[in-house]
Amino acid sequence: MSALKANLLDEIATQGAMPLEAYMARALADPEHGYYMQRRPFGAPDSDGGDFITAPEVSQMFGELIGTWLADLWDRMGRPEPFCLVELGPGRGTLMADILRVGQVLPGFTQSAQVHFVETSPALRQAQKQAVALPNSGHSVHWHDNISTLPALPCLIVANEFFDALPIRQVKKTASGWQEIYVGAQGDALVFEPRDIPAPDFSAAAKACLPATIDDDSIIETCPAGETAMRQLCGHIAQHGGAALLIDYGHANPACGDSFQALEAHRFVDPLEAPGMADITAHVNFPLLAHLADLADLQVAPVATQGAFLESLGLNLRAQQLVQSSPGREAQIQSERARLAAPDEMGTLFKVLGVAHKAMPPLAGLTRKTPT
Image 1: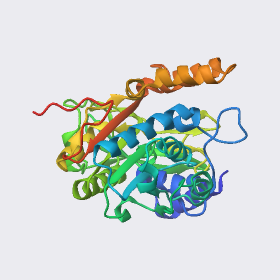
Image 2: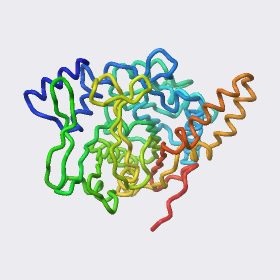
Image 3: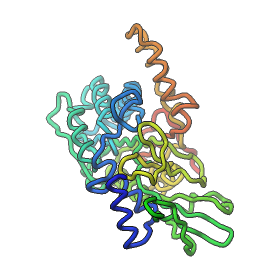
Image 4: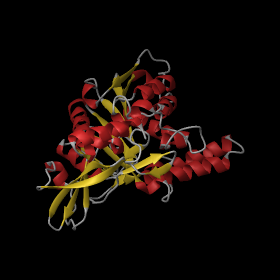
């Protein structure tokens, strides 16, 4: 039994069941036993350790294309100096390292950048410190617990698999009313425990993004922490300028469904079995993130799939270049390209949302939204 599970069982025995949102927050961020506080979760299936792998760890091509996208946007927005180059949930720092490496191709980009990470994990902060160094620049790297403390400067923000790890609530519509999903206990087991509630207190923004029809027995997931983070992000861009690129797995249209899941050693596991030892996530509600950006009067591109976005930035051409310069690695490079963009891999499940200040130029690779 994990140490955190033992603690939670004791707490439930004395205080009663806890909302799923509180359970997820403890499982991931408990100061002593939370998953991101004690573990380094990233690694390939054949590596020693790691529970999952993200796109930057799959291939250098991902970070190179994102870095080129950012450098091009910085150039077209007038080359602000200084500006904040921000990553939310930066993992081991692999993506930012690739961004800074490829960004050196455009003179002035890395020299003008102040790198800021929004990261709460001490273990991951240490890994990021080792991975990232700003070439030819006197700027240091800065860490933040949340978006609200970013400097009052134009920002170019990347969030790859950030929103999926923020705690969710689940409510269920039944024939007789509504229930919220709690986590309770039966003996030494943690169990889901539905509780009757009045009409759920969704935020106005969340209500606006619900499906038109909600059938009985449907699960609705909301993410208050995600809404807060998106409001902060949009507020900063609206006030200080810049843009954000959000990449995650989730749905592009209003939807119901239970997406609460856990991964350990690259395998799906029971999310209640060993809290603190497995990565717990849920699908991201992209219509809600886009709606919040609309409310902040930002430029909002329609949600795209990761595969289409990367291919529009030149993924296939970059793969061909790497094949030509790396004899003997063709199969590996083509496998990485497919992992990033193929419909049955990350290409369709993962979505891309671009938002920007109204004065920003169009976002490359993303269709400009038609005014209504």
